[in-house]
Image (cartoon, rainbow, N blue to C red; front, side, top):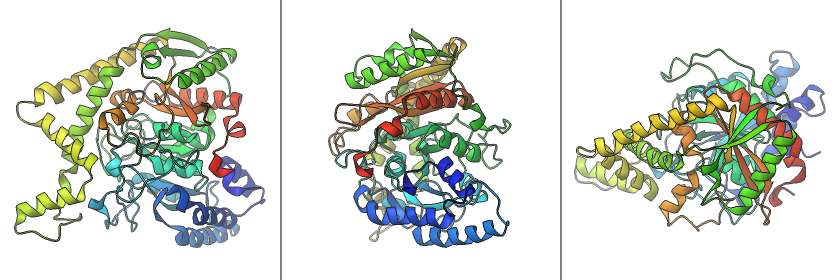
Length: 489
């Protein structure tokens, strides 16, 4: 039995039946990281020594009955824009290279209450700006299905670590597809919850009205279990929803009879790779066989969503990143003559090219004379996008689309073409613009053996619906049994 290949719910069962111990699980993952991390490059900071020590303490407390939780001692990986007290939180940027978080994010408090063990902080695109994890100051994470290809982004470290069995599950963040797109590229499950369902307190902000923390896991049941832990109201986050707690694992009924699934024809048109379309078509046929009702319809928002997203996201990034000034807790240039030079040189040297590009774009659309033409218009389009989705959900329970127009591309093939990179988000950004939940699950592979992701979009706070739809499909095709990354074989 290879411990690191098991899902979290399988690990849970084996701990309960005393087949394996918490110490054995943690040791297996630490050994795996020591052996394979040099190839995948998923971590920025590893906490393996601390994890081994924590596992021993939890094991002892479990044996004495001091700890009783089902998930106690299960390891996890954390994207490096989520604060863990006393641990570096770099956002993969030179600007925060030596920043040690003085407090825990709310999601970290919640997983700590369950005695879940952090194995470390995972690589990402700098300040979550990117679709390939090539914009990290520290390293390029590789895709475990093919080490010459990108893992997607910005949560590429999280998705690659789960796919390579370096962690059993991970937390990522999603501003325009940053959980779902890397999950698609790495053949794992990625869930972006409804905006406000999971607290953003302690998540370093990129675009505050779009950001959302969510799970990246090996299967749908694990995603539901992790969402159970991190979801819920938080008084420290004013955008946090006050909806009552839900057990999302109870929604996994393996039954989609009568479920109405809408296929927006605009998401299957020009720009979508033919093999991606073929795989999605097979998935649609599977849903029909399972008893779901499928219908094509028009959701003519994709081209407007992408434009609105980049205006809103860049504007909010410009505002949020204004605090990184070389004066307080960030990188400061070693050579300066006056205060103006500290600001200018610290930000010029501390931020990477993609972050600078988005700050400049955002500052432009917020500037006097351009605010009405761009930012205000972007927010008006956002309302139109929300209204279009509201109309669609009057008729359909779930909207099915590709997660990404293509499979994972070669490292370096798009890094010098920002526009082409931005188009990689075309299938995912509208979900963030409208504040909806979306899940990406693997639905097949292309001829080269690279995974293809299918996205299921639900109405606000309808995570139970999309989780069940994803779970039922997953049980039908058994992707994990039939396909594994070359790296893990």
